[in-house]
Length: 494
Ligand code: BES
Ligand code: MN
Ligand code: ZN
Image (cartoon, rainbow, N blue to C red; front, side, top):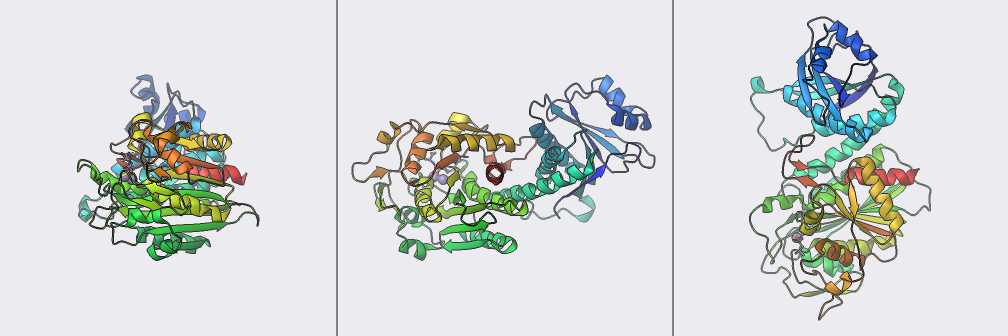
């Protein structure tokens, strides 16, 4: 059962909870409501702070025992906010750390207090709590009953203004559910999360939220002459899917905002096959698509009054006797011919056709997210997504949205010179430009197909999943780019 987050007024002499989480800044001191609680607990928190056992650093936690008296918490967890230059980001992160800790303890429920007011703080805390409580256990045999810890089922945000907090918690739940959906799809192995499953998930979202859904398969894409997308799908018997979700709660006639996602359910590299080491991570090559589905889920739950179209290009990149080969030339949906130099540069081939297909929705803007290049990971590490675009205002909009969501992006260039690197001897363009500026040449390739609308590309290869535990998030999918997409669309909704 997913975690339920509600809100209540903070009354220091009535916090009968299995776990009370107190979020404290760097070098913490006890302010009035907390000192009242501390007095009831015999000064345990005050002494802990005085001894400097807990200093409020980012991700710092300290577990204290509560008091065996009525209306007092059974356990206390101090969690650090750090310097908290970005208060909202610090709350979101600390809440995630706390929920992970509560899940490990098996307390079943928790109460959260941070001394903040307002809906935005409660929203961030809720997103964090849901993020920290998330897990993917579908494929694990559950431990025997007597060894099982209670699931974290309920969290209560204690706030002075609980009406605003309730509003924030509702919004946070909408976003948290979108993030959870994206992470769940991403975590699924390639034999479970197939293009078919992504299409079924889109149909389910459409049905629950009154959206229109369209799914093109191989036959329909052949009719649309999507030779670029289809050449990637040539080596797999699975039916590729081009999925469209249309959400229209904005004014009629308002041009939609389009979100595009790369949905490679597995990327072996194809004939240009990848090395075995770490190849299992290529199940995450559909994180852009998962981001679109998660964002559409959140946008609908938030009931944003905008028009949004979500587009996903999904297939699996496999070697086979009939797979596309290096040197093959294909004709894209837009009409440009492409020489396939490296079959492992497949994401751009899929997105090329999805981007030109997007034109028929007459989008106000198109933003795509794709785990597109290892080169982007080399450039920016796992700290920021690469952001490229043909419209500087839209680039700034994406960067600001990412910053608000705690999903940083960083602008990278699309110099005209890069075009030289992807000139082909036999076709209009080739699909790789060699090692130099690999993230930019990939983006430059996409730009050739992003005709007729302002466009931004996010390379999320380094940010969509983590190969190590990050403390606030375990190893696996991070939820990027759901937060950025939601903030972007929310920004447009005004
Ligand atoms: N899906 C990969 C990019 C990737 C790499 C994502 C590492 C996440 C982590 C993409 O399809 C790919 O294989 N790109 C190639 C392009 C190259 C052949 C020009 C790459 O980055 O090596
Ligand atoms: Mn690849
Ligand atoms: Zn790929």
